[in-house]
Length: 91
Image (tube, rainbow, N blue to C red):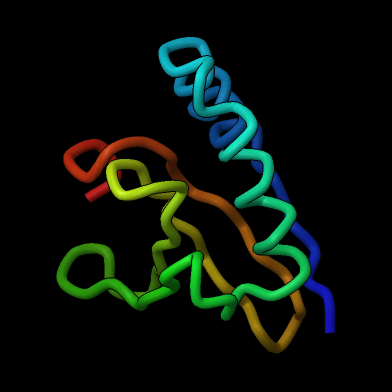
């Protein structure tokens, strides 16, 4: 089963800002998005549910330092990225 990534304009702005600050991560970032579409439960993504004020959202790893928070709608086979950045930015 493949999922569809649904990008909001707000997320696209955040992602553009992130990639402008971290151009060296563009390849890893794009690879993470591709893998997320193919298999969001792939072990290298380290998908996990968030709690507290971010309850209802999930997080995946770009690498050890950077994350993407997202809304995972399994019933609709859609993934809506919410934010991208380091731990302090996305949490």
